[in-house]
Each structure stands twice: as structure tokens, then as C-alpha cells.
Image (cartoon, rainbow, N blue to C red; front, side):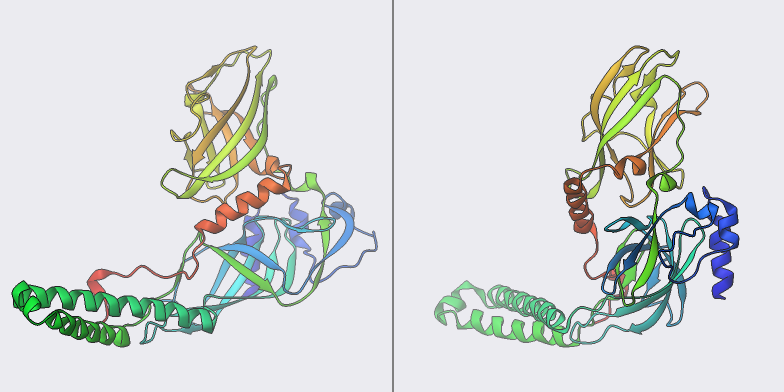
Length: 387
């Protein structure tokens, strides 16, 4: 089964020499410098170690649901950001990971959530190599953190019950009875309501767990693996260049929109339209991901370029923002020919991102992490709530 799944993925990977997929490297390698000619085009000849306890950011390719999935189910995930060693990239973004659900713990009384334990046994790089690893990931909270979370929730239930009890006592017995009893009717109602709330907390079940495509998971590596370092040019995404039109992406920022959603990519652009017969229009500009989905410029960002025509001889410096569905995908900035609908030029955002400053990358990581689910709780269907 494992070889069959690997073969399917390798056949589907584009942009690299197919000969590499026919003879994948497996396991560790040593720094001998005796690479085959094909590998010399991809690698620098240097070796880095993927250490124990290193963490790789990934996203799953299918839904994992604690109420539906079964232990032993296999799935694939995708590495969402390049993994660097001291000498360069050792695992590129887009690398596939084979995973399995090791353990499913159902939700329980006292508000204890369900959990999923996942394991990963090998990676398939974009050049077709299969790398054996041992990786683990669990949605289960640390026992202390989980207990604190449950206590906080249950106190909320109890306080809410007390407030409801007080209101009902005031409504049923009246303000006069409350005054005459010096508030004892309200206090009694609060006590009854608190008891009801505590009872609800004791029988309440925790939520189910769901990990969906686009959710970021962090996989901890439990073994050390020696890996070759990629050449930067070997990982460049394909682009469409129109002679005479130069588009430089000088910065790439991940941001939140005005509603607090981490879904915005802002590009700092320098566009020179020199000696061509083409006029570029902001209305014909889009950000396109690796699935072919196109995103128009956001009205919440700088709209200068959106309403601008870039005629032959023009040189423009501007920022432009796009609201996207998943910040972790590969993107290209595309200008389309309005008459034919074909792309005039297509520039890779990922190629530009490799030259972005470390400071900006750290800020972008914080933004992406702010969107990431902390406990992967599945939203409850209010029509099927279990009390």
C-alpha cells in the first residue's frame, strides 16, 4: 500500500526531471560530493541534519474527524514552509508527508475533548525522493492545561446558572419579596441555579476534533536524518516573462483584514513597462494559487494600483493586497490580456519570498500562527447537541 501511494504522488509531481522519480534516494546520505549529474543540478553537495525535536509545519490533504475517522486511516499532508538548515533548504515547501491516525480518544463527560494522535513515517520531496522519518503530532492538551480549560468552562456554567436562578427568583417572587426577605429569595435562586449549572457541567461532553485542509499542524520529528541541501535555483517556480515588462516583488507581508482574519497577502511591487506594445491594467491583475484559483485585489488595502493603467514607458512603485483562502499555498502575481484572457506575465510570489528578510518572515509566521487552531475543536451542530 505504501509503495502504491508513493507512486501516485511521485507521478503527480511536476516541474522536476522524471528520471529522478524513477530512482528515488531513500534514507540518509553522506557528504561525499559524488552526486549523479542529475542530482548536481538540484543540490549544493552539502549535507544538513534534520534533528530530533525539529518541528515541521504541515497541512492535511483531507478532513480528519474524531467522530468519523478510524484508527489506522492513512492520509497525506503537505509541508507549508521551507525547512532550513544552517547551509540552506533541506525540505522544500510542497513536500508530501505520509501519515496515519494512531489513536482516537472520544469526547467524555466533564467537558473532556476528543483527541487525535497522528504519526508520519516518510516524506516525498518534489524531486521524487522518499525520506524515512518518524514524526508525531497530537491534538491532546497537556493534562494541566486541559484541566485548567475545563475548570474555566465549568465555572462559566456555574456562574451562568446562578445568574439565571437569580433572575427567575426575582421574576417569580417579585421585588417586594426580595426586599422583605432581605435578598434571601435571590440568594436562594442563585444557589439553585448554580447547582443546575454545576450539574450541566458534570454531564457535559467535550467537543469532537476536526483537522481540515488549510489548518496548520506542527509535526515533531523523533529521529535524526541527514539530508542534502538544495540549490536555490532548483526550487524556483516557473514564471511567464514578457520581454520589456519587469515586475519585481520586493516584499511579501501576511496580514489580517479589518475584521481580524489572517487572510491577506500584501506585495510591494516595482513595475517597469519599457519598450512594449502592452498596457497593463489593475483590473486585469490577480493573485493565482497552485490550484488555479484567482483572487482580485482587496479593497481594504492600497487601491492605487487597482485603478491604474501601466502604459509603455511607465514605471510604478506600489503596494497591493489580496484576500486569499489559505496563506500557505503557492501564489503567482498575474496580469491578463483583457482581449484573450491569457496571462501576459506571471511572477512567482514564492520565488520572491525566499529573498524576504528574516524579520518579515518571523512577523508573517506570527500572523499565520494567530489563525491556526489551538485545539482543532469541531463546531457543534446545535440540532444535535448532547447533554
